[in-house]
Length: 373
Image (cartoon, rainbow, N blue to C red):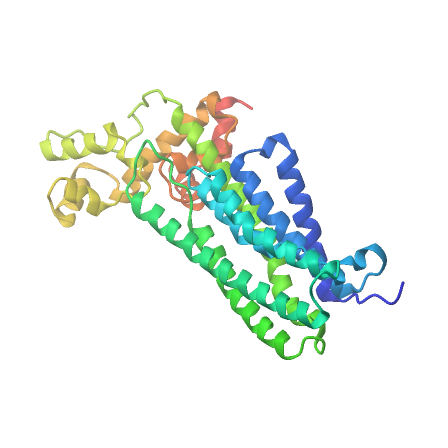
């Protein structure tokens, strides 16, 4: 075996490959994580890792059986964005059809056939293979960019359709998906530059030109792995929490003053009895529009009959909701973050800060205190 080309860059790339292979194996074969949505995210991470692994073997310069990748390339890049597309569909609670899966496998199968023809010397000369390989990379790039745009359109449509709070639907977090796609788009620009460079000097610069792209993929593997599984887990827990009918909570802890003002009583009943506070998007303007009054008049009305301002009043109701769930052993299998989001908060940080403000304890400390742990 000759001298191998190890350096800090391909060591970083290799660490990302190992992490991706371990993650995808655990998710695909561990019952704890097994679901259709998680399977698609695991496959996305797997093909990202295998794509990097092939090029990493070529770059390091392994001989023997591993040198097969000097000539035979498995077109895993044809499966990266399609598998992520399928994940997004499942994550957004849409049905994934077998026809769509088969359609996404066609470009991969065609590219694989071309590579096998070259490997067995059936068609291409080395120069011919370079041209075909560049053509395939160009097609893959265009294909992936098109899918990225389609995924973004699907996400924007989901956000538009589910703009308003619906107690029968648990909205999924989509911001992280858009961030990944924007980064993926930037990586495609690097890819374009590298294809152009390789056309002009294929054997001069070596594979080091791909280091930025491969290292970016390594970090993307980490992000998709943990953020994807975390958000899927939180969403699943929120669905289960919402399916449980909570007992009516006591209103003794609320800061409402007794009032005979009919308008204020109507507003109070609308917010509390219909649990409008569970809507994380609820704001002063929405309530004012509901009762055809100005924001300023609504603020005056609340300040007159309530010791708290609007935001604190709404958050106090959410805290009561969360406390009921934390007391209830039916929710022991769910994370505190999922409970906070189902109580109406829009983030973990806002839930914890509000809980500490009103209860003087963290949610975990409160749970222990009421359960006598």
